[in-house]
Length: 122
Image (cartoon, rainbow, N blue to C red; front, side):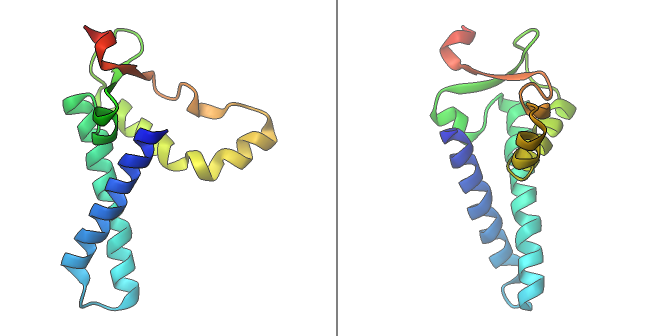
């Protein structure tokens, strides 16, 4: 959970900084639209490309954790990482719905990826 907080903070801060560089002289609505796009874009690059290329994100790296495929501990594939990112974006808003339905939902094993400690991969 701490790694998710670190990764989320990076995405929000970097996305807002990007919006300030791109649209600081624009209207209020345009600025926040650019900010939302910046946060989503930075989040995508950070979570998807970081997982595919490095098997980790900054938050997971700081906590010595890696993202691996469940079946063979290999690198996550691009589309699995995209699915994991999309499930992560919908987790908090969908939590009340899944609790009402009494199901775990697709979040427990949504795409066959696991977090493991780096030392367990050696």
